[in-house]
Length: 473
Image 1 (cartoon, rainbow, N blue to C red):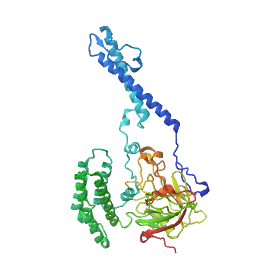
Image 2: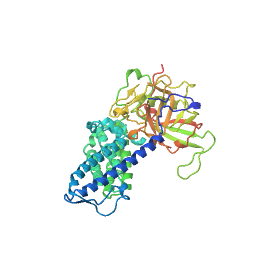
Image 3: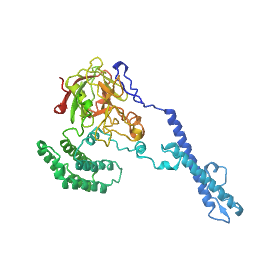
Image 4: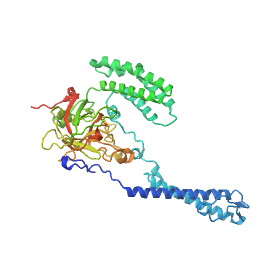
């Protein structure tokens, strides 16, 4: 298990990113696949022939031959004496056994599931997470942040029902609109029946805003009833737009329901800065070589670019708090960036001696508080609430002193690429770093950043009221 240590810009290497490319293995795998397919096809040809042979016990006839014998055998019907029938049956059984063996061998080659011992079909849920081609780990920062909000259980049930529609929309051609309609009706029923419970979870000073958002969720232009009509019209574009609007409203209501942390910090970490909720940090990036950033679609070339990240104190309060304090102190203004294939790193800040030695902080999915100084074992099914396997994920590098702590200063943007990911589309380093936020504005800027580019400024534009600083005295 390798790590990303604090490092200098001149020697930026990411030993943690164990993305080995093995063309030789890929070529051999293609050859094995071709061999297996050809073997199966040849065995099927023989089985078909033998099946035709067995239709007439007295005098049998063969209407097809293995491909490799087409040029050697005549095309007319061959007659066989009756006394050869039992030999042919025995041959057919052997061919069938051979076919089964080839099929099992093919499955063993191309499937990660072991075939030794038939009890392997009862694969554990933890391993199934890795082997699933569509592991339900959040694949966007917005989705990960929405799931991380510790909100009212009724709102979470509504959210889950709506997010299922996102997966249903990916089904090509005939989409299951009936199932989608059922999901929306379920969400609508909960929202109406549990109105008092939903609004009671909102603090008194935010109640008016919460009531407005609730009304918008039910009857608004992007609300559940409008979404229901779009589904009945079977218009996937309208459904997609309406779903996004409904989910945004759900997230806003949930944020009102979760004004602070849902757990108590361990006593030994109370001395660290902490962020009790969400914050937004805005970076202004400048090209180090005097060149410009390309516009996303049209527009003029820009000498500077804006990137916004949402930092999440609900899941990583210490890490987000330390980062937010550094931003307020101007610690990243003028910092140089270094790039690798999979990350954009700030400088290591060793000469600045800023920040706190915050412990590694990861909240596992399904838990109510983070783990400290502990990595997750993804192979055992442990997945983080804030996954690294998202393009633009924001995380802290490891400390030079101990892998149980994050760097006091150095952070990185993770440039997730599914082509370089492991089983289930997860990064090889999932669960190894303190992820504390995601890029929400300017993701198109990240691939344009090069080594030597500079952070002109970093500002905490939202969330300063949620930043709790330690008593300096």
